[in-house]
Image (tube, rainbow, N blue to C red):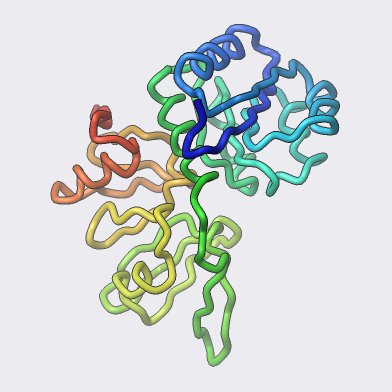
Length: 246
């Protein structure tokens, strides 16, 4: 069975046989649209497979430094990246690669399915939006890559744009509503609060902790009660899944 007439290939790079087996089992049982998947236990084996096969999704265990270094030898923009790790401190070392999600080891089936469903939807989605938008700053135009926007925060009639490649936010004289409706219109961006718009690719997990969403840069963003159901649906991709609230 394929998804919308499309099928995909996955490469799992993981020296941990238990987590690799867990992933392959979840894929076999739940994802008929993934027609091919391979497992590499080392970066060298992964590079070999990448030269002879086409993959759309890479799932890489980044716990070991050598697996992290694999990313220096491939064009990461060719793939949807998912990182697994038993050491979540590794997250800060991989922010520039813009993975679609992170999975903790030991793996939880529901979280794997959530992120893979999201990944497949992204692969299928025809993104008609341009990858950048222009803002006026100090009498000049600045181009911002949408994929580098971690989140936006309302500040009265201004909006702070927090980017993955800049230490300080970019502040523009536009309302958050205007930014969402004119610049960041894709489903990647989720309005979780009247004052906050987040890029779901930079959410650490699909868990709400104390009514907050944690972002990859360490920020905790509040989710309003009125938007909780909407956020639940967006993050889980199905009304049959609920976010676990601690």
